[in-house]
Length: 95
Image 1 (cartoon, rainbow, N blue to C red):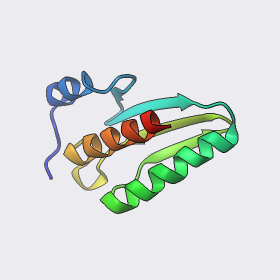
Image 2 (tube, helix red, strand yellow):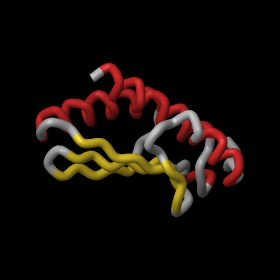
Image 3 (cartoon, helix red, strand yellow):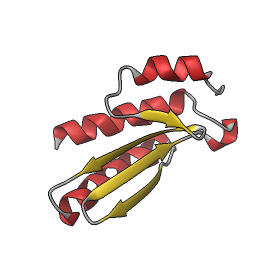
Image 4 (cartoon, helix red, strand yellow):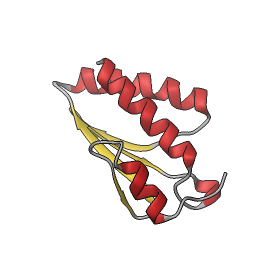
């Protein structure tokens, strides 16, 4: 899977509210009511990431979740990252 250009990445980001491109990855963050809600969403994302065989770099402190996506094999952002980002958005929206 080929690495996307910065222009391609920015065009795709127009469809993902709250995501940005920097440091060779796409990033977002979410805040939840509490740790349990954050962890529940992380678990749902983990199952999806495993199904896609594409895993996020992420961090969690109490009710905040920060996510970065990049395809290490391509040394940058690919369609795989946008596919997982879209799935993450759907998980978040489903609550």
